[in-house]
Image 1 (cartoon, helix red, strand yellow):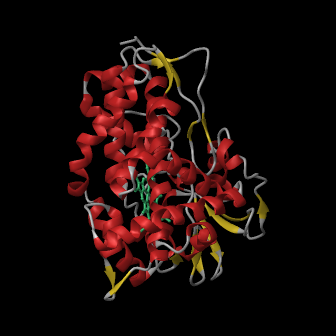
Image 2 (cartoon, rainbow, N blue to C red; image 1 turned 180 degrees about the horizontal axis):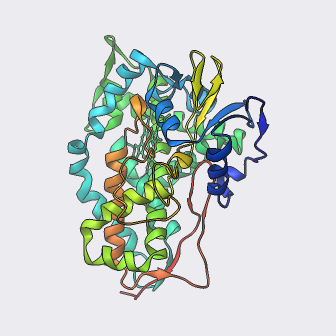
Length: 389
Ligand code: HEM
């Protein structure tokens, strides 16, 4: 199929869409690669696992310059760079996200989780999204980035407004400006007095013997803050949702904490927080028998690839013992998520703390939870009951 088909999605769907998976299954079956009309620019939707994996891994044919669409609000950052430029910029910060570099912050993460739970452990009920899963990763990323922790509430609002640019461009741009105003004095300070944080690394790192400009540093931080804050909370919320929906698995995980990692991995496959990424073809290319011209937008649908029945049998079932770690939720190729160790560590500690501190944890039957969204997915709220401490 080569004619553009209207997708009919509104910008609100990006956040509130109930269940895109039957639609993805139909795409995989009948039109695995097709040109869809999108809100900004027509794009080739790619839905089968093998094709999505190929698009993600072949960074020469499928360029990340497609991400420059967000340049107005994000500035220019590694997410839209290709080749040597990308490699050089990424190498400045890569080390800070190595698991050995992340390990020392584990203790402070555990403390943060305990502090959050202390606020509601005696109540016997909570909305875990509001009280636990959302506030946690923003505190972690603020700390690792080197942004004062007392400003995290403000940062959380800016991060959400920046990511909500498609929904409300005015607000997104204003948040983007405010982040810059906020960061400039911190950058000036780190340039003369570096600390052990990501901000200091980007302030002192060099590309071809040149320090990054203030604008480049601000752009990187604008990417990093939402990337760290807006994704991991979704993973934690969806993992808790999956466990509470599967009480036998919940009991198994309670009894054997080694299984927390398996629960997180299967949730990444089953309900990936990020459903799409964007690419642009540099040359004409064929995928699943369909010709895509050079200079075309391509949307590999990670959420569909992760449910491809030819790769993951019975893909709609959340299965604690599936043992499949080749989902594509952190992308692939050169742009593979920088924060994946961090995200998995945060999720493991958060799930373990919830299981330790909230006995008899269960859904509140009066306030049902649902996983929603089309671009990003997770439970909007997670109302639970537990035995009060
Ligand atoms: C469950 C949580 C997360 C998911 C599902 C996720 C997903 C992704 C995906 C799919 C990409 C690839 C984008 C592309 O190919 O265009 C990516 C890249 C990236 N992620 Fe994550 N991410 C998560 C957590 C984090 C965290 C915690 C951080 C940092 C604090 C982070 C920082 C980044 C950065 C900087 C990139 C760009 C890498 C590059 O372009 O070279 N992510 N992420």
